[in-house]
Length: 107
Image 1: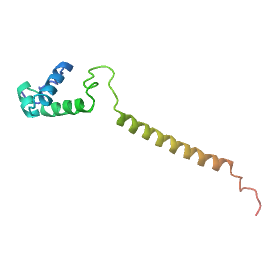
Image 2: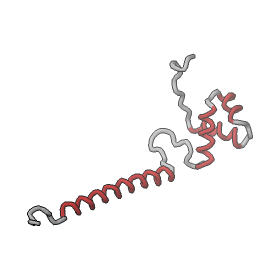
Image 3: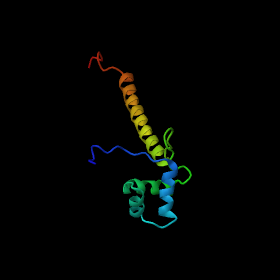
Image 4: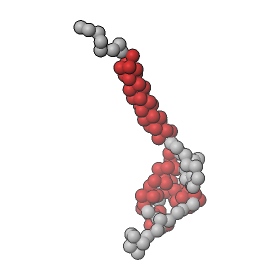
């Protein structure tokens, strides 16, 4: 089967948990489990990483996905920077428009 004909497979939470347990609890390598279950190694590495990071919220499935704290902090920092830049532009505009006009001062 060529790469163009391959469709993306979807695995349920129980399947992912079972695969991760084989790596963590049984001590098998990701390569061994990937071959045994006929799944991609990189997907399994990601599942193990996600599970180790947050076991209780790993594999949320479809629907509302969790936002890791680091992503939210990063998003809030970008938003804060944008707001600060906007504030600075408005301050400069205020200074320009409130400056006394130099026209007609007859020097």
